[in-house]
Amino acid sequence: MKHQTRIDRRFAALKKEGRAALVTFVTAGDPDLDTSRKILMGLPKAGADVIELGMPFSDPMADGPAIQASSLRALEAGQTMRKTLKLVAEFRKEDKDTPIVLMGYYNPIYVYPGPKFLDDAVKAGVDGLIVVDVPPEADDELCLPAIERGLNFIRLATPTTDAKRLPAVLANTSGFVYYVSITGITGAAAPDVNSVHGQVARIRQSTKLPVAVGFGVRTPEQARDIAKGADGVVVGSALVTAIEKSLDAGGKATGKTVPAVLDLVDSLGRALRAKAKAS
Image (cartoon, rainbow, N blue to C red; front, side, top):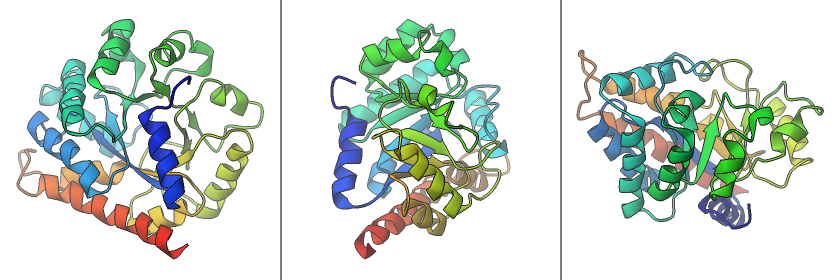
């Protein structure tokens, strides 16, 4: 990237503070647009340093049941890509500093179509993209056009990303590297902390980018332990599960829905800040 982005600035500031970033994932429009808006607006104050906003899709193949269900709830409530970008634009009017990364799959971007999506994303105030089903071999399709518009393109590295594959993964990555702490789908298992720290150290030998760790992180204790060897901790399935558990019998939001998410984010954020003070 030729210029410093919100993501770059946020990770640099947190490095000076001596703590890892709390990266939170929620699905846009889950369980409905109004409730999703309230959650999104409340995340920074609750403790989110970077926000990943899921782009609802009918076939989220890398996601476990919790995030799949959140996508389905959002789609059934009428969420569209244009509504998602409008949601970001509304957020950006209130918050000029917190980075927002759109995360999801290529199909909804392709049909938007792609160049128009990128232009509208920049206009709305999006900072980066994680598109899990576009490999480095297809960088001309989305990654490079995104970079040309000033967006960070964030890649996933996994336990199976070996030394031969890693350079391709890192080649056009910017903002941060997302290390997937377990093999398989989101929310499937708890990560092995020592293994994760070893893998993060290996990735750091090949890049100066921050490394954020996600998949399987659910509790403040897990977040604190992962943060000891990472630049960021990503929590997603636990947050969308909190939404799901707060809904009424008909699957609609209740008065407990927004607090359920923000209270969990608060506890996660406090764990990371406490870790920084102790170190």
